[in-house]
Length: 346
Image 1 (cartoon, rainbow, N blue to C red):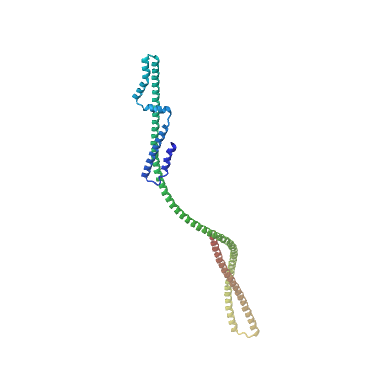
Image 2: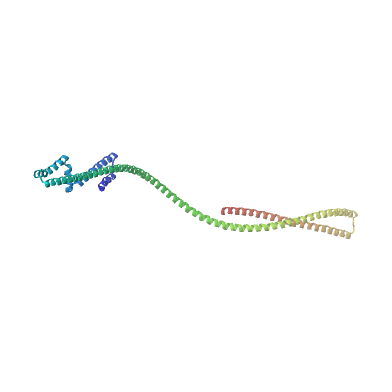
């Protein structure tokens, strides 16, 4: 019975996708009726080919009560009549035995028939309940089939959506592949730029070292120039002081020389007025006058040489000042360049 019950379930579960709900219901009812007919046939086949006792009990059970009583009377009548005629106790005993045997066999056959009928009815009731249970199971299976059909439709829609999303993912994957390729190219370009920057940084560091060395040399030259400038300033100050002293002395000497020239002019005028006649006195006077004039010329030449030396010192000081300004300009340019290189390097 289990194999017979599982056959329609498989047939039902194999065809929900291609049928409408009405067709499925009709087919389920048809399968249920066929299943009930098969169960009835199975029960009937169980009652076929009974035993001899079952056959006798079936025949006895189909006889009515009055027929059973009439049969008992017909069975007991000959012994009773024979005992009444011959007045034999044996005949009565046989009649009693026959009566007891008939009643016992009748009760036994009735019980066997009733038991057989009840057993058959119980089997049919169980089969009917089983058929109803199978109907309920089929209904549940139909509901499950409908739910499965809905789930299959939902899965089909989800599959369609998944296919659409898969297309979008493929497009996104292609876009990501292109972006990855572009990023790789950018990475290669950045690596190349990094190598170039590293080489440039090394060059800048070397140039910075050279510029620092040049700046140190320039600083040393500037320090030496400042020292020379200070020395020149001090020398110029000393020369200025000497020039000032010489100027004052020259002014004093000029004043004295002016007084002496004035006195000399007056003397010459007086001497001219006296009209010196002697030649020797005139020569002595001229010699004295020449020495006086020559001495004054030497003093003036010394003053002019001091003034010339002072002019040379001033020129050297001016040259040193110009050189100092040029070195300061170069030093400022070097400092600016070093700051620019330092900003590029860091």
